[in-house]
Image 1: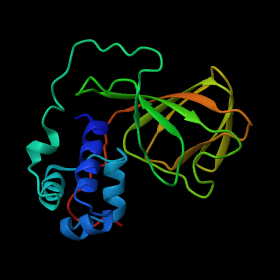
Image 2 (image 1 turned 120 degrees about the vertical axis):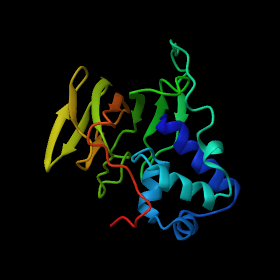
Image 3 (image 1 turned 60 degrees about the vertical axis):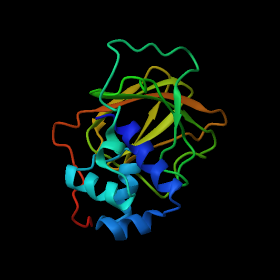
Image 4 (image 1 turned 180 degrees about the horizontal axis):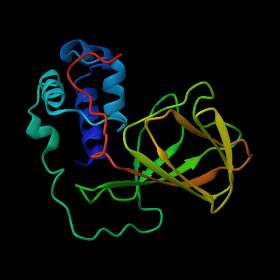
Amino acid sequence: MNLIGLARRIKDFRRERGLTLEQVALRTGLTRSALSKIENFRATPSLPALASIAGALDVTVTQLVDGLEGQPQLTVVRRDQGTRVERDQPESNLVYHSLASERRTRAMEPLLITVPGSDKGVNPRQSLAHEGEEFLLVLRGRVDFEYQGQTHRLAVGDSVYFDAYVPHRVINTQSQPATVLCVFGGFSQGSRTVSTAHQN
C-alpha cells in the first residue's frame, strides 16, 4: 500500500469534516498517538483499524484506498518536481518531498528531506520512530544523526541504514540547510501495524 497516499487521504478527509485527532480517536477506539502515526505514515493501519477510521470519517474503505494500487511500471521525477508532503507537524519543520508519488504500490518510500540549519528541524526534545527500515544519505551539508543514545556526524556522501522502530532524529546545527535522501521500507518484515485496540 502507498503509505503516503493513504496518510494524506485520511488527513484530508478528517480536515474536510473539521475533526480533530482526539475526536476521531473517540470514534474509533484508537489513541490519538496511533492516529497521528498513521497520518504521518509512521504506521500501517490493520484492516479493522482502517475500517474503523473510515466509519469515523463517514466514508467507505474503498474511498480511502481507491486508486492507491494502480501504478505505472516506470516513474520519472525531474529535479524539483517531487511532491511535498506534511509529516510530524507542528513538532518538525523538516521539508519532505516524495520522489515516487505516482507509483501507487511500492516496496520502498524514497523522500528528499531539507533539514533547516541552526537546529531548527525536529524538536530537540523528541525522537521519533516508525515501522520498517530506513536508509539516509547526505547529499548536501552536514547533519547529526541520533540513534540509541549515540550521535553520528554525517557529511556529504555519508549514509546510515537502520531499524526505524528505534526512536531516532536528524539535527542540523550548521547555519546552512542540509539535504538528505531518505528511503524507508521493509514493512512486510516485522512491521508494526496499528490495530483497533488502544495503543500505549
